[in-house]
Image 1 (tube, rainbow, N blue to C red):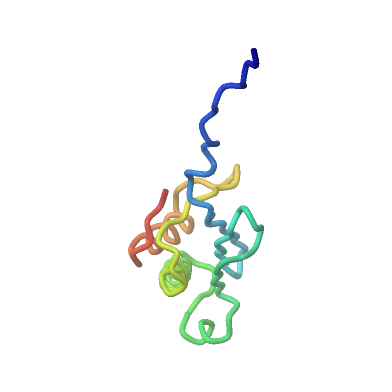
Image 2: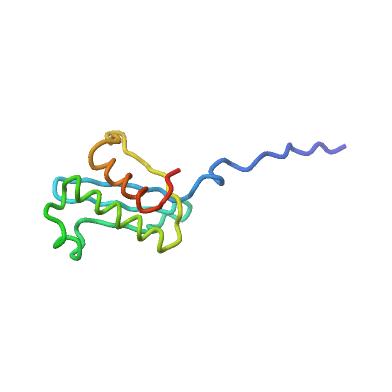
Length: 114
């Protein structure tokens, strides 16, 4: 008699959205990237260092710039067909200020947050 191992359900990570929103803030610039976790590649990104955006912004490192970066990133994600992302916050990042501006503007652009 052969006893087969039990059938286990698939890992929970297969059900989660594989796209992760990561943000980096310096005193001068705001950068937001969306990475595809299984392949470790950048799916889309937006930064206040881009030449087309620098001229449109008064200050490239404040909360208003973070909001514009989030809106632009959300539009780029929808163009690529990415409807939902999950947010990864670093230990020192709180949902406040620039982080909140980026996340809210990505959500406002039509991308769902998981």
